[in-house]
Length: 463
Image 1 (cartoon, rainbow, N blue to C red):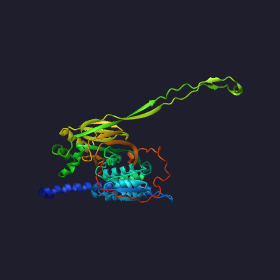
Image 2: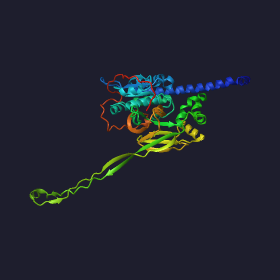
Image 3: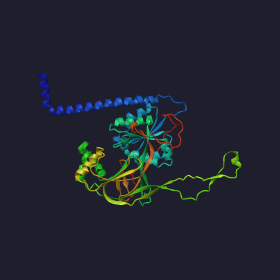
Image 4: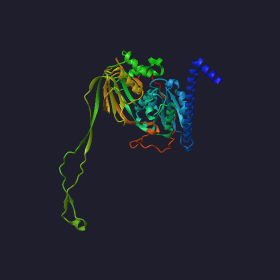
């Protein structure tokens, strides 16, 4: 009993140290327990990957070759370490040949994907920015149809948001996402993915016709600019993502654009069914009697000639009259089926509670919105924000900041890419319209060589 009193007295007299040691012990215990769970999960994945690597192959078959386009600046500079710790061991155990290409600046991933040859799959290790560059590079290839059919893309989520990776591999645990995205490549689990095309319609000859591509969304306006200011409130630590919406409304009016003058046109598609033009009736066709007598008979029974009437379908597209308004936020997402675009136009006048609650719901990935937007649905949209090369505006495409220098046309390209995905998100890849591929093992393909890339230039993306 005396020892218990001594311990209690010591804890009371040194309560600061006691609290510190308790918190540190709890944090250390949670970290160690999480480490044990990660190691056990990786052990299971390694055993499964080894079953693929242990399968014998023919003498003339070559290892399945994957080229990893790695952004070393993602994850605070830990991309290479995380890839080698969680993804690379699985690929090597499966018997894959792995080539790594590190990017050193903007546009390098785009230039690399433009000239990529002789590999069986391309893995993008990084965040949303390098993924957008890679998709843009693929879509600007002259042989993009053949390339996307033979060379699927994979995502190794090592960025901050990882928007598309969170759709393909749901979950918040980074280690499990890395392992599952790598195992999807090993298991060859794929699905078609639609792409958003953004084309510049500026009158400037240099900028007109310039295109970039994304896989998630496009947004511009007050909530986007408030989110971009979150690093100003670093002293709130984990709460800075929430406090940025509070202070952006109260004190950041000069840095946040609340009124976006926009003009929007939508493409209307109609399917018309036409009847063929009326034709004069055809003369009756003689119908003779059967047998030998009918062959020599001069009399014949006349039967009318029947003709099948075929209807023709015609698709007519027309641009609707543009609608001008003041908006607080413009956001364009793909529909659930990936064959249409949904444009959400949020009002420019919002209360403090409405602005903050909408910002927090975006952080919580809550689909319900406290601020009701106007929604336009179409396969193509024309958007004019009255920007120019002299007075550009900023928008976000797949998490990457882009300068907007004129009106743009936004289109959806359904199912033009093939991406590796999680097992629960598997979709059958339609190959009915694709050229037949040569017979091969599920794991091995044709001989390959290490890819080379062109040096990019360091400049801000503009459209």
